Amino acid sequence: MNKAAQFIQERLQARADSGSLRKLSRLHLPVDFCSNDYLGFSRSAVLKNHIEALLLQIPNLSTGSGGSRLLSGNHVFTEETEAMIAKFHDAESGLIFNSGYDANIGLISSLAQRGDTIISDELIHASLIDGARLSHASRYTFKHNDIAALEAKLKLATGNIYVLVESVYSMDGDLAPLAAINACCKHYGANLIVDEAHALGIFGNYGTGRVQELGLEQEVFARVVTFGKALGCHGAIVLGSPALREYLINFARSFIYTTAAPLHSIVSIHAAYQLLAETDHTPIITERIKQYSQAVEIAGIAHKPSESSIQTVLYNSGIKAKSAAESLQQKGLDVRAILSPTVPKGSERLRICLHTYNSNEEIQTLISQLVLLKQHE
Ligand SMILES: Cc1ncc(COP(=O)(O)O)c(C=O)c1O
Image (cartoon, rainbow, N blue to C red; front, side, top):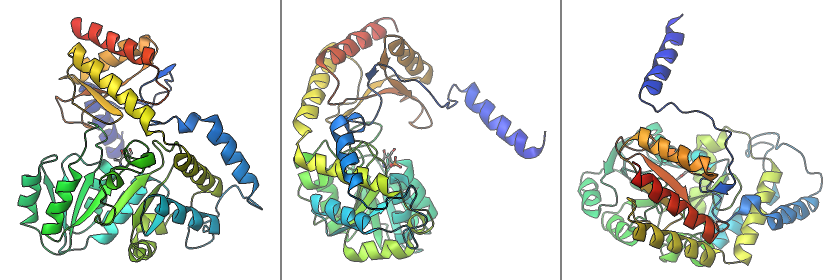
């Protein structure tokens, strides 16, 4: 075996030995408590019909975009979609990226220069971490949602300062104290960047997100909104000033050096935003979240309190979390375990996603099964 092959083998074996080897799963069970399709958009027949009708209106629709946005991959419809989404979010402008991962690495790595400072919440998503790593700026993290800890790092910062948070945290489902974070950033002249991946469709009027719910849209430096979760599509947009948009077109490498999304993908995003703006889905999802939270509290199941569609059931070991997920899956409930290193060792959990299409009965069945599992632990 050559050295590279041996390296691969050893790393995989170490993962297997610690019970954290990742595998692609083909599991699709009848009751979905796993996907990020919070509003059911990706399975919506109404949306599908709407997309098909919109596609028919585009003359000479090609399968692929044929190149990057800067070459043959741009289209007037894409720019109209960006303007429409920016308007929905009360932002001056927006630039679509092929994914939330691309948006975050492109935005952070292009902005922050040597001598600048990036300060991030310790629980931010890997895409924001990778964006910061790709930059040449100094990097600090602060204790999750802790304003005093953020302030301590702001006092050490030099150059342009960028503070990175999620409005809803992807693994714990808890909310950032955005108003206090924004006030702290303002005091120290720092630029606040908010990832709204898990807030879209759930918070704010018609699901505009937490930044708008709190009236902070004119305050934050930039927002990243992704389309792969509540919107049921794929891709993301960076919202900010027209100058930021132009800067990203010129300097964000994950925007420049990649083939643009095909137009049918942009049409799906366009149609999904129209659906979001037409009907307020937040009362239904809020009701589901309330119902689940009350039931889990009454049942005394160890969890992290969350007002979002992401809920956790905590286990102190990966093996226990995996075994609980497998038991639930045998009952037809699609629940997945989240293991280290995605979450810190000792905080392995079930990540339960609630959807508008989860019925009361499904939620009750899940809670009863969780109680049974805890009794037999
Ligand atoms: C908070 C957060 N930001 C960004 C992303 C990346 O978005 P995408 O899946 O569109 O690449 C995710 C998705 O996992 C996420 O949870």
